[in-house]
Length: 342
Image 1 (cartoon, rainbow, N blue to C red):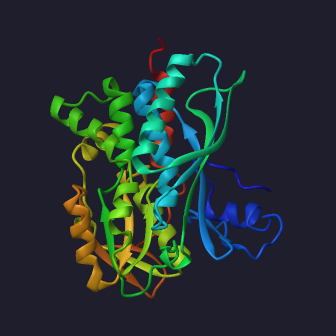
Image 2: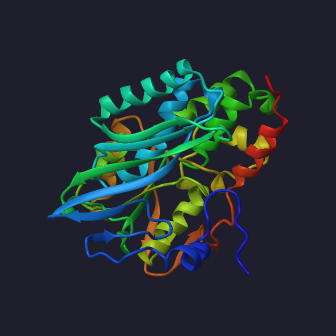
């Protein structure tokens, strides 16, 4: 019997059973292939590394179409940025709902174009069409690409026993920003808490953070905490590198607005989607410099634990299980269904 698929990303067991054995032809030029919890793949092209990752395009009209375009773009770029090589090319396909107007799409595309220009990213191919049955927010997919040297890549499975563990921004960044922006009436927060929570949406970008620390000697792994939240991402780092992680909960940053939103919606912040939060492992002689580089550009970061030779993720000495699902998905579905239609 097939495993029932939860909302959001599939589980490691589903991937290992249903996808990993069926990856098409085996080719020697695939130097990093698909693996659960690993953000990107790598091809060798005549000695040059081509880093690539594909993600859905999610456009949330209630964010405003320009803001929604920037948000969607950075979700795609993050999975390549954590390789340590800056994204340089983008392919993108839109399967748009019939109700989107030319003006609304222009706002999305203008935002994507402007951000790509600022980051030095060229759009090299794509597809754009309106289709009956297509609906917001899932309106396509995109592939980010980076080109560089193989020895420049920070491998997703590179964490080593003895490394320090660094976390930026903290849990539930994406969930907090989205819920505060899209469902403010359901939250009923104070003005200050509402403003702080909405500001988290601008924290869902990692490209510039990754660039700030990629050249720091001693960085061994970077990973973006997306679906499954910070806890899920910690398990993915540990599993992919076959190491353990020991985490001090009190050392983990908590951004303004997160506790208020998660408390109001009864969400576990540690398992709520947190795009923009980086998990970084680095040698002890490099970790302070990593934190300093991030702090210098206004990104909160802290050393929160260490990589161990054991397996799994311990928080305050207690072994944890990977989350079965993302705690924000059911809440988003419920709030979306109950939101008044225009």
